[in-house]
Image (cartoon, rainbow, N blue to C red; front, side):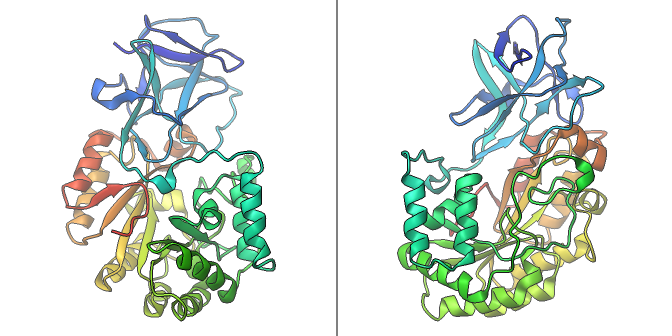
Length: 402
């Protein structure tokens, strides 16, 4: 039997193995044993303010709901079930994962879906990161790309930004301050009425092809199988600047031929994507939260494009021979809705992508359900992930070169 893991008002964590907690998978229910694993290293427990855990038994109302943010490489299977106080604030943009106690040990509803040394959290000695930033920027002090990724490295701990300075793995190339979607849970520019701070400050300027190319060349000269990627969490939609991206790809390939040039995009502009492909783009990762138009549009709130345009971009990239990944923003009760799995199966039976990267959607669960709706029937997140794999599609969390 699972026991309740909860917090007091100050956020101190407690266990009660006499009370079975309930989880939220779109439908409130108990967690199953196969959905739980011991909390892996790197988990971050957190209190959910103004929220009390739901369970199968009564308990004092001074207990507050607990959630856990998972480390990279894990996919969430359930979210916490709770009751809300009237004045409970909207939760900030984190990935709230159900947690409980089993045999006096914290467990989470999650599964391991990828692993990579380039995405393993690194602990820097005092001043180590700052020195790496200063040394690299000194080589190209006027480069605004470097200034932006230095900010992201320091303030947000962004791995792809830090990789620019660590000279490893996938390196960030932010390019666009504008976007053509108004995502409900945008991590760089939330609507003012939300009254929540954005987790990241969006890049405020348009970086040039030359600046981007200099960062890309430096990285690929030092990382033989490295990846350089346009389209990061600190920016809008990169395809709005496809002319600049195409030119920077051309400049990069004039100097280096190794490594992979990747684009992270919402896939909204097939013609712009074709321009980048013609310039030498090798890989693309297209983000979406759903294969159903109504659910996609409720979250992305697209401006001047539809989910059909996104699908057309995926088909275009596959036909051109690119390594194509889908960045699937997952959420229990939406991703594993039986209607969602049916829509996903229909698309994947027609279009063969290389990989689907499952990404926990960082958002207040109640806020998300209010936007996209709750399911009538769910198959479970494990079944949804198994359905992806049944099409011969690799499941993971990171960009891979093979």
